[in-house]
Length: 128
Image (cartoon, helix red, strand yellow):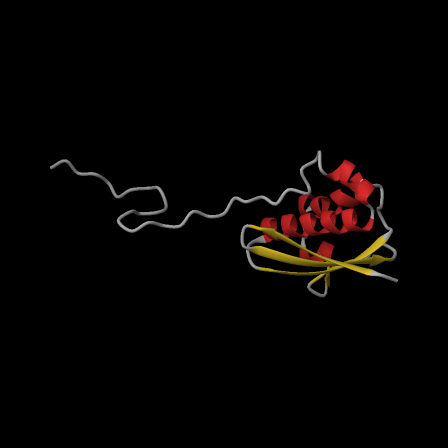
């Protein structure tokens, strides 16, 4: 039984995914993914790569994720899963690439600049 290891990133979240053949169990940081990500939308994002490649219930996932918030973590996991599925079977790339699941989202938080209130917001200008 081979284990595929891939890394996904999004904003400041980093996810390590260990994909192995199994019955579809998903554990995130030692907890079930439905407990870790309680909302329906977040659970859908984790299952999305499996649904697109018709591999639901064929692989067990062990995920280690840290940094960022829940959405960033889920999208980092989704990218890592997609990369792992492509490394297992190159044909999966045809299903995942058009949906944008193999693209690393480069958007990061812009840093705050000195002399300003936030990254782009200025202090109020006073003419007099």
